Picture 1: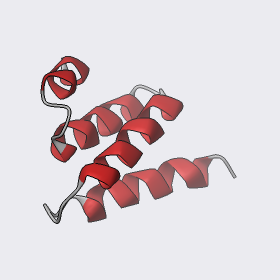
Picture 2: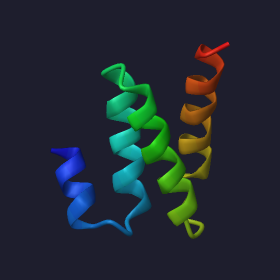
Picture 3: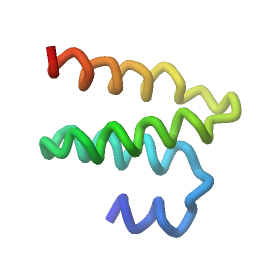
Picture 4: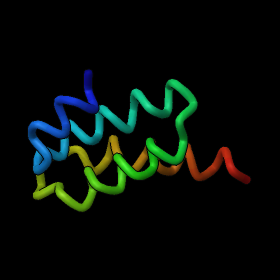
Length: 64
């Protein structure tokens, strides 16, 4: 449902951030990274940088 919502509002960084969070919880790490990077690219100072950046850092640290 989150992915569908994000596709309806593709310029909404929060939608992609939550797609990334849900994907990470499901173990879909590459999809999570893609969504979180998109969220960060779209962010225009909405305050999600800390959350998305932290989640992305956690995913990257798991690959070590």
